[in-house]
Image (cartoon, rainbow, N blue to C red; front, side, top):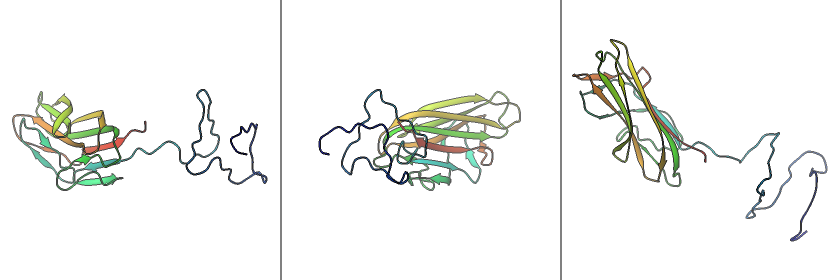
Length: 189
């Protein structure tokens, strides 16, 4: 049938199982406003993936001078779907070609033995400038942890870095075995 309207209640194959194809390559299938698609089976090809995505962490301590922003050198990737995180030179996540959009970005850090009443800062930098920063006051002799998370609208070529600042009146080490991590993933919109 060409240029007509087909009205049916149920479409099945003649055998009751198999594949039913609606439309062909180059065509658009339109679901009108107000209509509902109900899926009681397995879906494929719908939605999207939260990629690019990566997660990186450190395998050794990193020295943090007092009251200075320090880029965290997360040198091991747990995963990196698009090869967008540099874990050896710049320690940054760069938005690849064709992957602009909204991203969730998180940095988590942990420092041992900050003095009572001293502070730990963490920050997410975009293109060399801070876009989100958090601060926490340390407790006496226990590990101090902080997480900074944001959602940002990223363009191709934008890059993100994890930073930390120790305000303890002396140099401290970033612990690598107590929850230090840097990750990001694209939001499906």
